Length: 416
Image 1 (cartoon, rainbow, N blue to C red):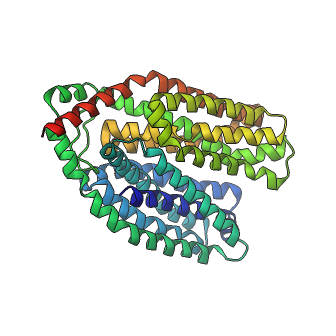
Image 2: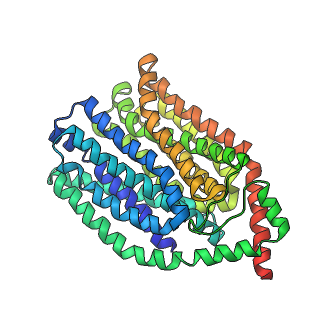
Image 3: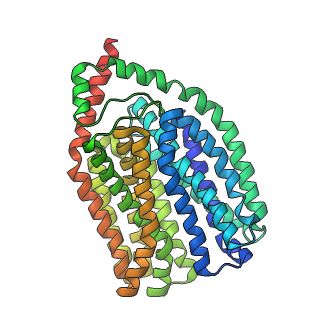
């Protein structure tokens, strides 16, 4: 099941990256101005944010895994639509559909991953997000190779075919093994002794099933903690969006780098983030969630200060790479913590806040660059990484609470 779910994370990154690299060609095809294209692209974010909350409810009712498979069918189908449009208005409408599918699969597969992390009793969440990053690198690399030979229509249609084929191959395994999580979750819930239930209720209501079989009812304290973890996700996603959109321009405009070298800004960041996520499980097992988040936030803060203020291109690229290493595991940990507290609803809330950070980051950087300068604006990424580290340290007690709950539940299961 872990392998099958990893495939869906990689597929998500692959499809999204395939769309991103064809944006310039579709802009030319539709005759959109920069402002019109910006409004059309906003539809992707709008569709994702609106759908994320709804997906959390669907996961609660039908289970995270069936919803993941359904969205994995819709996502590759929807990515074939943008090159078929001939106007900006129609492009915005189909991007709304694409954004809805993208937001839906993001919440559903993260909810399924939270259930699997709980079942495995190992912090493997970063490995799923590493697969997403790897799929994105593969999709963007392949898109760059075929962009000069194929128009967007056959390229994105090919991605549709590949996506549906991968879904057809991986879905049976995911559905077959995923069904076993529900009975296991029920046994865990039944086996939890009264003392363990009391301990859990002090922080979050008891589980009602795996794979989205039931949602934890959120009291005020739980909602507050989910919002806090969502804020951590926002701080890190803000940095990812800012570097993707403004990193190359910073190198080219402020450090006078060659356009080809400037384009490597996000590549260095994404590659380092992928490496960091592949090593995330080991870091979490050795250091724990709190130290991983605090250390990652501090590392990203230092790296982004170097990337924004370095006097040379080489140092700036090194700073972006260090930032990627630091931010790599913070978002997965934040989403996993929110899901552990509140089920699919927690994943949806944290994901929505995180996606909001990626949405508002680039425009805010642009405003601050106009008011001050682009290097100064980019230091806001370092500031928010530091905020994530501080919040991670402030919420360190929730980690020890979860360890106690898991231990008590395991003892109860053994008694049964």
